[in-house]
Length: 565
Image 1: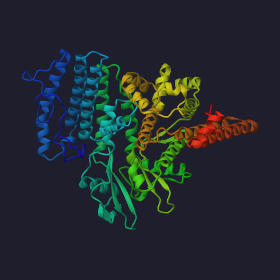
Image 2: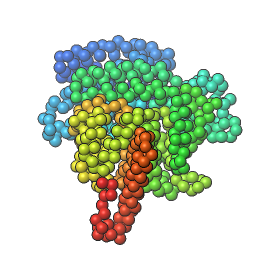
Image 3: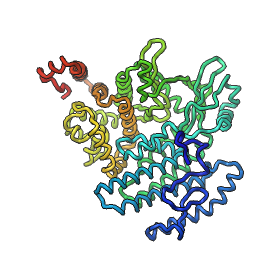
Image 4: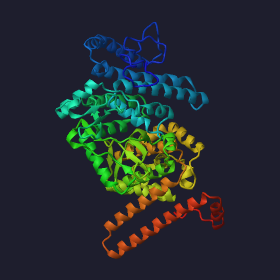
């Protein structure tokens, strides 16, 4: 069984894992055996399918035993990985098909049973990801980040994959380093810590010291990831098609499309190094942002050596309190970073989970800093998409309902634009129509959004398959950032929308100036931009004043409520 301390720990993981919560017999690999002694109520087609699957599994046991005898990790054997994934998918599908039929749809009992099936299925997926590793963990991390798009049972269970991925042993790491850099670890580094600082789906990071005394972080790719990822994606695509056939309302083709597109990019560490330098240069005017420098002489497509940077995770309130870091300042600066990346530059770091965003107090300036790590996954937004996205958020902030409908439809939402707006903002439609910057997020509304994520899951899937592929990573990024805000307890703040407003105004004005041919027209655009930014600044000052008792009294007399309208 998987240990509680480390759900993906290699030592705590047996040959394979237990995937069946029902009291049926299992074979040596832990897969369920359907037999006369343990009858299962199945439809004729499903019964034949399961019996054939059982025959395939039984026939493969001898092969697995042979691999184990030769000291090959069975988790790296293609046959074992395929059978495990197919069996897990089959058991999950069977659980949904049978468990929900026993209760009446729409009743309280039905919702309870559905939640239990979600939880069991999420646990099975977690076990599958931990055992098959690589691409499976990456997809599991993606699902775990979609807090406001998927049922809570899935996201809370799969979130553990962000910080608890399996590790490669030092021998495997040494082999990769020597193959790529031509020398052994002890020739290249004065010291190299055996225990990794962290492990992820594709790689793990070790702390080391160079001969010049510099402390570095060495990111080394897991040795078998490249060979397995192509097979894994084909397998996932086949399984997703099978699930879509059995459950037409649940098509996860968008998830496979993302894996197919992003995997080759993330496996190229040289690309990650170039992304790191590009974002550092692009956002150099933000002095609170720190990005590690790359040591190109010790970097290849599978090994990335960079400046070592440390700090507390961005969602660790206790660390910030202990080190005198203002939580609100961090939240505000994080919003500035991502608004600038998305709306102004169209070059977006799409993996801001807490392990990739650190905070620290500068020893030189005594100011809070944000350290941005793991630059393998970036989204380049096309100009048309970026401008439509700017217009949509501008409309959402200004409560411009016609603009919300128009730009949602331009981004592929069609008649589902109200649902799309709710997915984008993680706010209820009632809050959107009243003004998302007017009403802070309440616990009741947050719970309503999470419940609706389950209720409208088929429609959400339909939307995710319709919108441009660029939107998928932005939705994931939005949810990860909201998760950080929730952990910091700053989500009720209007600061995020204020920073968004500024960036939207700047981006749209810059584009209009570029298209305008007359100097007078450009002057008018610049003047309108200045006025809009002034209004936003005044609104920010007003919010600060209203935070005081005197300010609330003055604002009430003046009736000054929403200058952004």
